[in-house]
Amino acid sequence: MIFTIYKRGQGKHTRLCSAFAAAITTGLGCLQLYKRLQATDLGLWVETMVPAGLFVVLALFISWLMNKPSIADFMIAAEGEMKKVSWSSKQEIAVSTIIVIIVVFIMAVLLGATDITFRTFFTWLLV
Image (cartoon, rainbow, N blue to C red):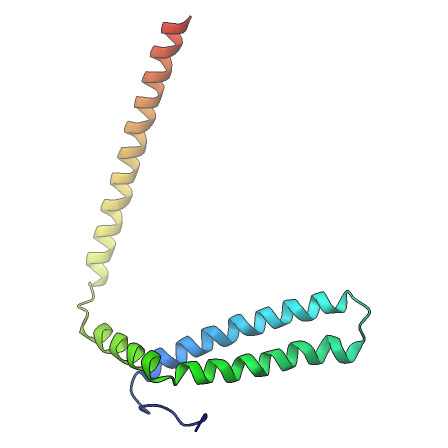
C-alpha cells in the first residue's frame, strides 16, 4: 500500500519535481551530516551508515508524503491551475523589465537627491 501511487498520472510533473527537490535537500543534509560525523572518531561504519540510513528513511517519508491524498490533491489542483495561466510573451516581459529598471533608476536618483538635499540642509542648520 505504501508504494501505490495515488491518482496515477494526475499532477505528475508537480509531484515529481516536488519529490526531486525534497530528495536533493535531504541528500545535501545527509552529506553535511556525513562530513560532520567524519570529524568525530565514531568509526567508518557509523560515519557512513547513519547518513545513508537517514536518507533511506527520509526518502520513504517523502514517497509517502507525495502520495498522501490531501497533498496529492493539492498538487494536482495546483498543476491544473498552472495550465490555465495566460503567460506573457517574450516581448511583453522584455518591455516590462526595461520599464521596471528605468523606474527603479529614476526612484534611486530622486531618493539620492532628496537625501543629499536633507543632509545639506541639516548640516547647514546645525553648523
